[in-house]
Image 1 (spheres, rainbow, N blue to C red):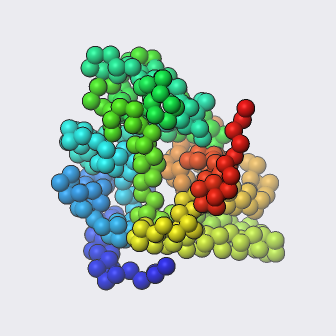
Image 2: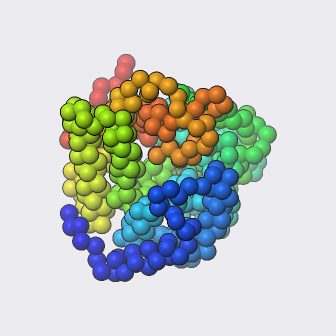
Image 3: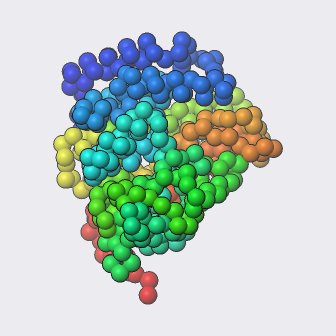
Length: 411
């Protein structure tokens, strides 16, 4: 693992740093800098336009599709510099990071021309329709069906835990298009308009009071025949590439949200005197060490990507990192509530929109206003489940990396 970046990467870093200094609002990132929710919403719209004009949205995409054609190293530096100052780098996470790269790799020229420019300009909001009530970790058990009806797919079924579905213009979803095929083989990857009859979105109110997740019901919903990505019945393979995007270029920045949050928790302990407790200090030191391990593992992951390493230790990092950070986050938010003491049992939020690290902008329901730390504590309960449950990640490491026997199937 070599932590020295090549000279051309550092030259590119200076370019990005200068651009950020010229385009971020005066005072951005300094103590006391604040925006009201209305000011931030207005600025976010303008910032998306500024990013697009600067060419930074989807900058790693090929030039013929509007990107800058950045190398992996340049993309890493770009992510690092935006993360360093806390500046947004994406118009729409699901579009920029997941479905856009998937269309780039698997889509037809017609699909690329139709969807990629709109993704880059932030003109389409997306959501992901993979999980179902009986198909979470065992995603291939999904039951949502798509039947070809003339020039359209007719879709019936249900998706769950669909983030931001209430705001989305399109959903990229997996549907069973051949019920007779083996369960991994009869699935297709479809791009489906959300704003149509036959689609019902029901927000799921979480314990934090917010409702970013949703249930989505499809009753004879429609999608054009041409909106299959990667070919009919090839959806499983396409979906696996979607789930794998951005691991390399964001590897060196993923730890930052945990570092920022830990600084908040340490500051809380100083303010209420718990920092004098030897056990609290020990737990804070342990948390700091864990965040540093995340940082180092990020560089190990980047090394593996840059060298195309087949080393089993590096190959295991995807699964082990998910276990590592999700279980750490539950422990450290437990610690935060312990440091709050009895005050942790009282909702102390403003009731307005807050930024929750790892979650994004979050608005509590009326009359129920947790603080940022309380919201983070609630949200962390789910992190060892979504994106691959911890038990599944352990199976992956055991079977694919350590070569242990496969887990017996239930009879």
